Image 1 (cartoon, rainbow, N blue to C red):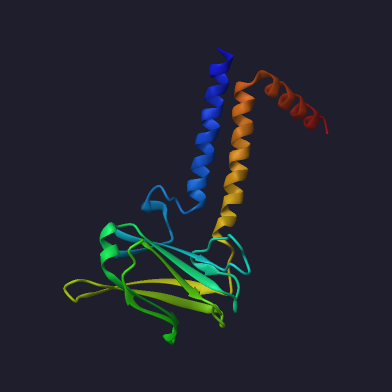
Image 2 (cartoon, rainbow, N blue to C red; image 1 turned 180 degrees about the vertical axis):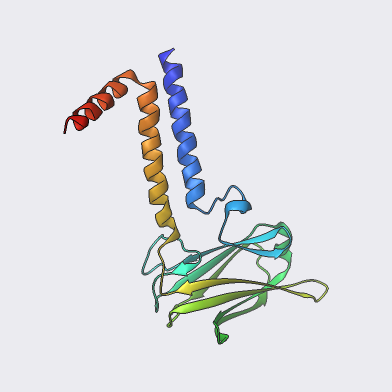
Length: 196
């Protein structure tokens, strides 16, 4: 009976942990909660993540890049298989003047992932626009855009700290409700706190 009780607690904790991981990575379980995406066509998406690997190793960004003059990697993942057979062109411009700072000619990306490297990053703070042009077999050009700001912001993965913090307190709460010895310890600590 006790083993089943602890198995239930472990199941709840694992569920909370993996939910937190999905939230920390832009809600990868579904595009409805994913803020780092382009809609290329109605209900056809391209996921986007930016990195500044020299300044912030392993940190993910979306709409804000904190540092200037450092390497930027823009990573795009197709969420629709059919785009793997179409050529896609990429351009990054400084706005509002529309000055081109990066361009990659149209080509196919059979793996479904495109990594664009801007070795020097961007030199000016402000707004930038990523232009994606999908070249249809019919010759039609389909354009999509997404903006980001450089020189301000925090890594998006910092939000995972808050999520893990909530998971930690969720764990304490589950243990409080399900393990009598933990409940006794917590109640004792709360009682002592009230005395002060």
